[in-house]
Image (cartoon, rainbow, N blue to C red; front, side, top):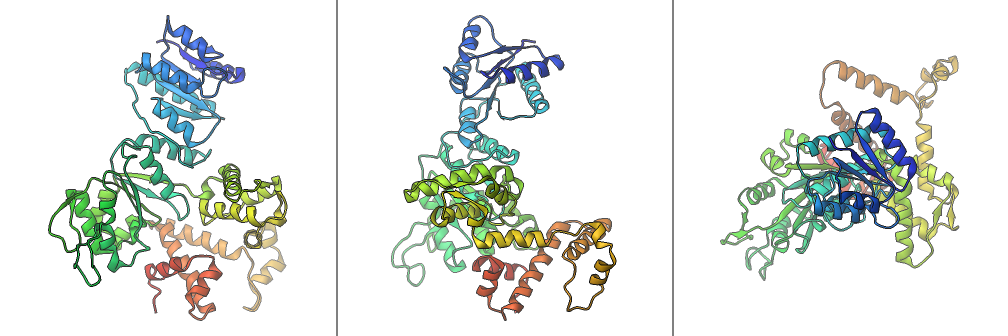
Length: 489
């Protein structure tokens, strides 16, 4: 076995990897720059090359390109401290075996190198080539997985289902898949199936012929036709009416469709990327979504993490959005004081990346100082954190005191302890799991949402818009939830 070559201008990185590989009995050789590697390649070659991406002189991506031109089967692992999509995409574009963001766990790095060695010994090359940069940032492991998936999926025409909470960036990822694909010269057409009235959705998707229905005074091209040779992004696919699900299934199966009122089949040369925040498996079980369509869409699933799963990305995203808002408004970018940044990292961000972006835009416009402190944050943000703190369970020692016990047993006029509902929830989860129940999370979430919405509607005497405002959700969201949860009068 040939040695693994390590190239990095940082001596400490070279030292750490050399020690780790030597401990695992993997021969290795270290270089301080790309030119040294290129000189050595004239007379020798490694089993695997591990290279930094940013180095003085010849950079890692240029080294990758030149190495691959001579040794296309050589696995190259690219290391970088710049955790953005550009680095990942550029690395895969050059044919990298894998992308390793710094700082890395040494054991995981060794595991990755060993996998590359095995791949090299099998003389198998990697060939993935995405291109260009959309605005997706992230250092969290979950986002690195998303970057890798974009890199590997971009050159394929396979149907992709993107799942994730509202505001997590599903359309941004869909655009990235399009821009990095062989269809990037074609159009990217997006349609939110939940935002179109069901009686108009068929015409929106497939177009209509003149006279097909009242008001159809001219032929109209639908979204499938507009997306010819490009990508069609169907957002909120879980809300698509049943009759449209049947037509969509036929297009995905046969590759042909008809305009409303038309008789001539039209060939669909379109890559479909669908997205939903809903649990499609549950909707299939409920009979609300066709199982055969689900399997057609769920060829490759790409799950986007919520902000709660990637709090370490909040500083990076906040700087990005503050700079973006400042450019749009032609002002100097605001900065978050350390205590304000830490405060924001503790927020749940139910609206995910979109909510964080809106917050940064608000701060750019309305924060009084150039350096934003906690007191400069919007009042509702501070109230939200205060509410979260008030729901924190009391320490066990406090809950066991006579005073606390009296509070629990007090008449209804006295508020219960803040932690009581969480204790009851823990007990209920344990009971259900012990009874062997399945899908406990989904059941409890539905019950929780139903209880919250019923209470809000009682509080507002049935006024949905006011209830939505008080709950901090959109009007369409509360209407959809009322329908999904069977809360209609």
